Image (cartoon, rainbow, N blue to C red; front, side):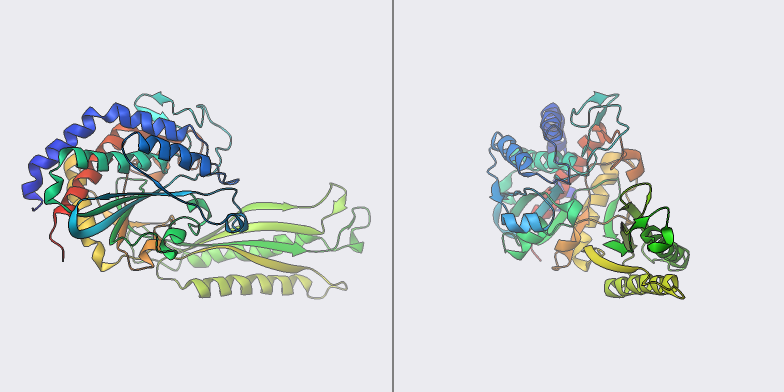
Length: 426
């Protein structure tokens, strides 16, 4: 079957999704109600609840939990990943649909219950409504619609739902664990989205924890110590100066601009009247697809080493020293040639359902989709979301999603699956 001959099937899919949309919203709301704040990352309860809800649809979810010591070593409390496999006709491709359940903690400033799934003016509010518990429902109900509306005997291949729980910490316990242990070998994959666009590339991310060591002393006799905070200030000034240089490095990927660096957390000191002997800060360096991650890390380490040397120059004491811990290294996602069927189908159906052209481009965010792409599995990012990430309030107070966007994205995914499972095997 071709896309054109699938026309009546698209109508059936759309109708089924419309008829079951209240059920989809209830499923979605139940997922938002179970917290998955990471940290602390105690996410197995959400996986168990998800599996229970999936069972009510006739879906059996496989449970894949990494060893407890590995979970602890990665700074989390519990992780259980889920795989649902639904087979169609023999042959064809295996298409994975991946969404992550873990989220950053709500933080302050909410005017709605972060776990309430409250619906106001057609929008559902709550942590992970936009990224990415919404796509637990998008992918599940797209698959249910396909199985209910389609003549599955004419389709070939398999669809897998991958619901994982450590994207916020890099994906090593989620997709990486499933792929490295040969628990799945998809041919194509679609990952949870966060905007109308089809995302084919994204930035990489390096995160480091830097500890500045000085010598604690009484504030009344500061010269008897070495102020770690002053040392940290010198290092931070050198790091922030890099952002000016980064603006000269421009990516050729549409949607991605230039590298940048952010320091998101600083801790240190013991009391107001004590010269701080230790200060720790955590930095986040976003890497464009054209950059080499090893070179980026080496450059940052050299910048900090030079700043330490400059601070210590001419001092009579030992000065400051630093220790650096790499927290996260996520490579950039780069487009693979085999993603064209995904991009073509999503753009065609996105335009038909949303009534506007759907661009394919890159994003400055990073995701665990790269772990599939690094293994040669063509993938894209597409799912429920607004026109921009900013509009969704993702990772901010009052995160929300327009339920009509959820409905329409579900239709786009269902139609796309119909095309991919109907296409001849190449």
